[in-house]
Amino acid sequence: MPNNYTKILVLSFFICVMFFESRAQVFEFEASSRHSYRMPFKKISHLIILPVWINNSDSLFFILDTGSSNTIISELSAKDSIDLNYSREVNLGGLGEGENLKAWVTYQNQMRIGRFIQSASQTVLVLQNDIFFLTEKLGFPINGILGAAIFQDFKILIDYKRSEIIFYAKNKKRNTRPPDPKYWHYIPIEIENDKFYFWACLSLAPDIFVPVRLLIDTGGGHNLWIDANSDARISIPTPYLETNLGRGFNGDIKGKITRGLHLHLYDELELKDFLIAFPDSSSLQHVREVESRNGSIGAEFLRRFQVMIDAQAGYMYLRPNNEIHAPFEFDMSGMEVIAPLGKI
Image (cartoon, rainbow, N blue to C red; front, top):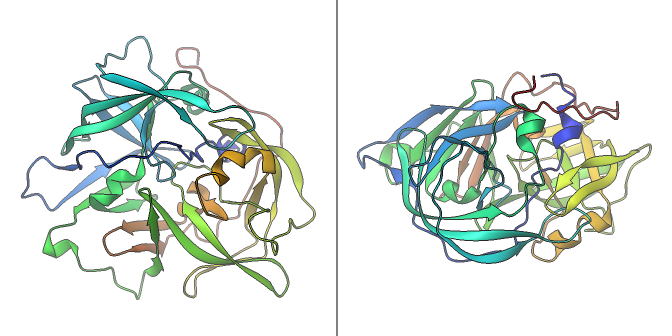
């Protein structure tokens, strides 16, 4: 797929769900003796798509999304067979200019991911209306998103180049050793509601550096988005392009896109001339109600690394791959291409 995916998916998965409760039963390996599980994933637009089964359903496909605290079913086709225990209705909030979206809460769901990962009791949200149309946009059947809670149960390595994800049992001694700092960058992370944040230093103008708290969002196709109103020192560089950045839970996301000078991470890691999206204030109103952050990084940033998240140790580890110097690009054609299944 050409690189024009950026406009279609940028910010589509910045999901800030106004629904928090104690964690359901954890994910674990089926065999307690297993130390790790190497699993290939389907990669479309640098998004990680995993096979999931819920309550002995047919195989479903979910996007692994560290930008969401919850697992969410967004779409079921006529051939999808799944039994769910519906409990109550909730409002969901996220990016976009519209009203909150409604979903049903379902409890005590048995879930399996791939061949060897299971959970006996998971809470799953079911959207009452599909607003994302992910299957049409990606040309592949997508049923929902798998939230960040699974990162609490495993140390997880994402290899974007090989399209592989490795789950490590966190209670096994052989899995506790951190990666070699000679090859990996160590980024301290903060954890809130199962989601991961880190601090970086953003330069939008010469000699002006602003510390920013960023969400790690594997479910967003963007590079970096920033809330321009989150810090008085942040201003939008010129020139910029006013555009529709994507779609969130609350409707279309409008804003501006431009380039920044530098983004410094915790150690010597630095990115230059990168794309930044600035959503309009009206698109961020629901996010500000429940989260304290300046912005987020997405898959366009993360794909340039091997990414390991170790929630127990409190670190994200990054190892640059051969995409580290690939240019940051944005589609300016104004076109959005969809591929309805069965019609291509």
